[in-house]
Image (cartoon, rainbow, N blue to C red; front, side, top):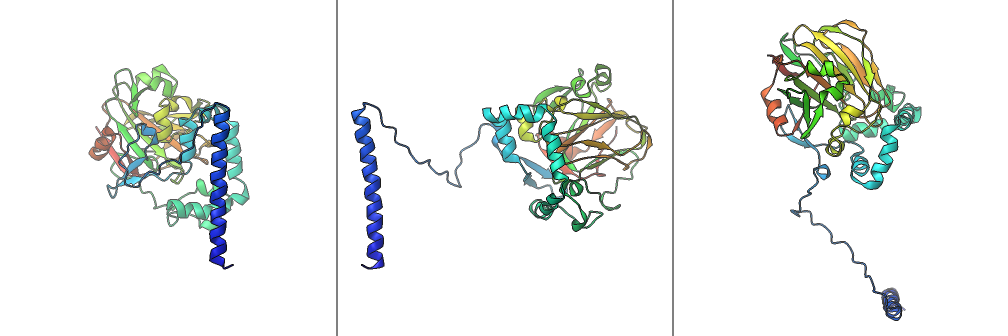
Length: 353
């Protein structure tokens, strides 16, 4: 028997077995008076399908690159996990344990400080396009992944705008700006009303920002994770409030816009001669093992490092009193459309009103 004849015989035999099994199922169901449920293979979705997704949290997250003005689809690690945690019943059950207790984030931080995690650095750099020419140290000098994650940059990598009336972005990240906050001090994040009193955990402080302005900077895991003072002046001590560890990804915010008022966060009042008493709020996130302050309370300089986030994504919020800031037109236009804009630390985002 030739090879082709043998192959045909095997295929015919397999088809016979499948058909026989199908017939036996039909007969069994008929004798038991039970309906037969035939499984259908899912219809593949064509690449050019025009079907839309009704849930905005299921859509790809896009932002605008400020330098090129192009729209970019965000390729952040763990997006699939975030969708599952916030978008499914089982995921939300797991989220209760992850977000409500610090153990998971603490263990993640501990894991990323182990020496064997350094093998993930090169793959991460290549996958997310991290520009290591800006880094102060060479790639092979980092002892673990968290060491790389909290990397410092060369002194000239993030020059701060020298205009004394300019508002400088305090960190690398995706920016949203809000001018003319409501009189009852509410921050309109993702179409929802987030009370500033809950964000700063103080009614008296919140009243200071009625009809004021806000700058929100979301840091993705591949961003430079050290943040700086937006202006000179005097900085008070950082006060820690909150005890949750939710993701700050836009997908998570779409499901729960109150995340900023729940997560662990550090709040510092900065008395700026240009912008008045500004609240700087560093918001921790899922898998952020800690928020580290590197400054000493007292006089500070524009561009001076204030602190850094250890492993994970995170967010900065700056609150300004009324009539102190005029944000740049491009940021106002994109924010009005709900579009985040990627800005680097030191870039101008507004001017003294």
